[in-house]
Length: 333
View (cartoon, rainbow, N blue to C red):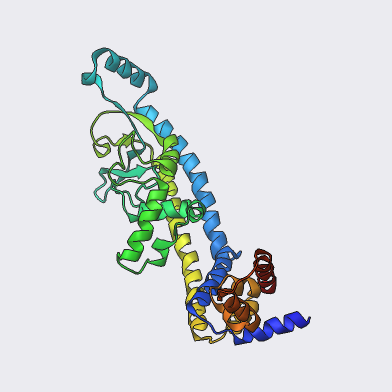
């Protein structure tokens, strides 16, 4: 009990500095990110919904594509390619398709075609464009959030910088995430070199055989209106994951903004520890100070004296040096 009182008295003397503020901030922020809040649960549910929609939509896409390009025809054309070479090289694998239906009518009563681009790749656009964009990247980092965190990347960078234009900080973290995912803008969209690592693994199940060497927009694949609607639901589920990720990170950032203001205003470490306690967060004060570069050494006279004595070039036997070091380390505990 006496030791606890001494430690608390020492704590009250320790002034806040940038290092301590950052350590406290990161510990508390980590708790914010792992709390079972409504926003976090909505994000996790949205990701589960994506998996469900991907499974159903990809199976449906296989059915629709093979209806237009029967496997028998694909097999025959591959045989011709093997026999005649490049003139018959008209079969390719793709993971993005223009699906269309003609079951709607315009205001004049004429049948109209409704079509859109659906990309099953990790970075596929969420609005029907055939070109990749930040929307696809936002989906990718949200979907693989934990994996990216484990690689010391910041998968929340798009959400954190949502209101900001491109800047060096944002660019740095986005590039780190893209590299970790295996994305490359120079090869994205090609068949065999469509990314590496997580990107390649994600995309692999969604490639289907199509006939024709032209771009996908020139070969709209017919489907029914109901099938088209299901493809739209799948794409909406992807966009919903991005939205729920943004909402969750917004809620964390609002808390962190207030946290920064408070920690900046505090003069002593004890105030920061009290804040954490009031938030229901247990912080190991002794560990926080021990890992600090100056805190305990400066404000604990015994430890400071030991450190200074150890700096003196006094003749000591090897046994005396070992004993002094042992005593010093025990004093830290």
